[in-house]
Amino acid sequence: MKQGARAEQQEDQVGKAGGKITPRETDYPQWYQDVIREAELAEPAKVVKGCMVIKPHGYAIWEKLQRDLDGRFKATGHQNAYFPLLVPQSFITKEAEHVEGFSPELAVVTHAGGEKLEEPYIIRPTSETIIGYFFSRWIESYRDLPLLVNQWANVMRWEKRTRMFLRTTEFLWQEGHTAHSTHEEAQAEVMRMLDVYGDFAEQVMAMPVIRGIKTDSERFAGAVQTTCIEAMMQDGKALQAGTSHDLGQNFGKAFNVMFQTEAGGRDYVWQTSWGVSTRLVGGVIMTHADDSGLVLPPRVAPIHVVIVPIYKNDDERAQVLAAAESIRAQLADVDLAPPRSRHRDFVEVVIDDRDLRPGNKFYMWERKGVPVRVELGPKDLAKGQVCVKMRVDTAAGRGKEFIAQNEFVATIKERLDRFQDELLRIARERLQERSRTIDTWDEFLAAFAGEKSTFAWCHWDGTRETEAKIKEQTKVTIRCIPLPGHGPEPEAGRCVFSGNPSARRVLMAKAY
Image (cartoon, rainbow, N blue to C red; front, side):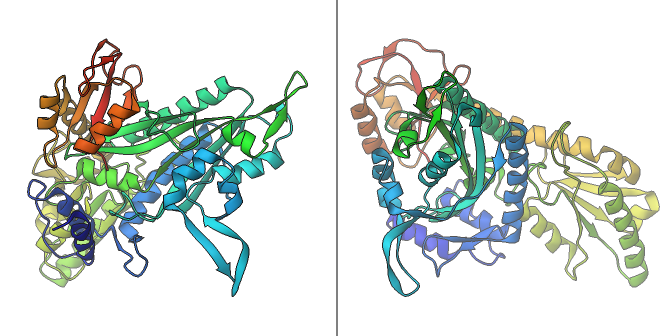
């Protein structure tokens, strides 16, 4: 079956939960779709080609990610704003490299109100152009700088091949846009926001990342330089999880965004842009989920604890539910947010009293990735205990544990914090174990044969030609040139493909 037809078939199968999850080792792409279906995260919007419907549980995960990031942005001095969805076509064409880079992905509105528009509108693929226009109206002097704004919005990039959360025609994201009086200040902003993304990925998503610089072939259209964070998924492929761009003065010149300098002259502003999207939800799935379903780090989980009451009659039901409500009330006062956080993150508890067998409930909540399951029955009440089961076995808990109720409540934060740390440790070990140093082309071909991928540190001669040939022959791309401390130190060598001299190793992998 061709890859495109297979992708469409997989999308058709993403709908109502209640099926089996294909093992990762059997069919990783199908496993990914199955986890999304069984966790009830999203489904294809078949009536709108290439788009998806994000279901409540999936959107709640996005809200957790969004809330934490929003606090980080505001802590670094950025303010939220909103700009139009429709961008005049003439704006897109003002920056030549920008329009060339986005042309294949543009959706164009030519008619509205029953009439043909005098000028077509582009449904925003990104907002550098229209924000550049408004920056030109807002900035007059160096006293207006730096200007630091962020937008939470949807964008549209017409995709031929789609995959839930990872690549859809419409998706949700944030895009930061800033203007500065000097290039040095703009460059500092680029690195500051890359560090915000990197810290967020590791501290909140428990997803380790490599920070680096994109090659010229891979940089954002219209940028001087693009930096990124790259994460390894469980199949060894890379996920570009965030980007931060140095736009130089390109958009400033295109939209005449000038300011009076402190010395009294006139100059164009230096701009940056940076963003992450709902593909982070896909990153959470592919970093932590297993063959039983979704696994959520506590700082991402919309529900932290599910209590499953077990009883045989109405009297037992009343007693067990009263105890469950008491536990929920106590847990609701526990704040998981780290010190100096700009938001609270109280423990969210669900008491599942549906008319279903306990085993069915265990099965469903396991698939949804809830970190802690509590079983509570009359025997537990008599002993003043609860039966606790973590979503996966780690140092935060293994198998079923019988714990005194007061001890469980008193230690829930410590348990969830440890679970968060353990998921990050496991992901870091996987990244370390599956990263390789490769020096020969034969070894390279073996590492990436078929659908295989890994994080390969290889010498590259620095040419676009070599980069393009490697991609054409193996589907492997240069993910980034690592920043100091995020990869091998620079050392002279020979390009893994051409054999020509190379100044340093770069990160290569297949990618989503």
